[in-house]
Image (cartoon, rainbow over the protein chains, first blue to last red):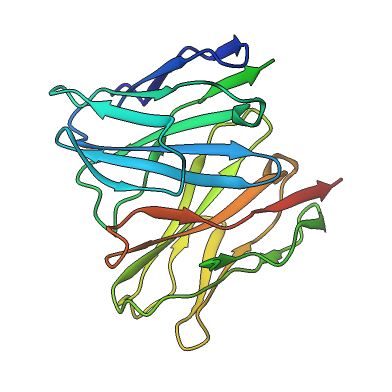
Amino acid sequence: KAGVTQTPRYLIKTRGQQVTLSCSPISGHRSVSWYQQTPGQGLQFLFEYFSETQRNKGNFPGRFSGRQFSNSRSEMNVSTLELGDSALYLCASSLQGQRNEKLFFGSGTQLSVL
Amino acid sequence: AQKITQTQPGMFVQEKEAVTLDCTYDTSDPSYGLFWYKQPSSGEMIFLIYQGSYDQQNATEGRYSLNFQKARKSANLVISASQLGDSAMYFCAMREVYNNNDMRFGAGTRLTVKP
């Protein structure tokens, strides 16, 4: 069974640009979560999608958005990039997003904003 | 408010010895799950062990065990017989029904295993 796939692996953007990150969950998983990881702030929850609906959102500005498609694939978009958006963005999936389900993580997208 | 607290930014352990990584959590939800993940320098997040709030026994997975003290809201990870490959960041995490089951992480502990 293929794992969680994130593309691209690395991205370099400049301030003010926008970026879209992609995540394909494990087959059969309907819940997809996104996290931002930085050395200073650790792993911060961005949002979670289940059956194409955003179920919960972390404490991030509206520049961060996402969506989920009918095949459970998810995209995350960051508009008007700032230097502080430089981070490792991790996507994770689980079957239903229940409290007893572990998350399966992708390898992440390393975003550098110059 | 910080829900998951890992008070040890860094830990050192001698190869083949056991080590305990601390984790305390804060919740008023009676139904929650506790997780530990390992993140090597390569960046991937590797699931280690799970403990449910209603589980009566401490979870074990090979060399990993979870010392679950519910009344103290503590879920410490014990790694027995440390190996050089155990050197990594370790994250404690929790999912609460009250929080829509989103997984929230602690700040992590960097473990270094010395030969």
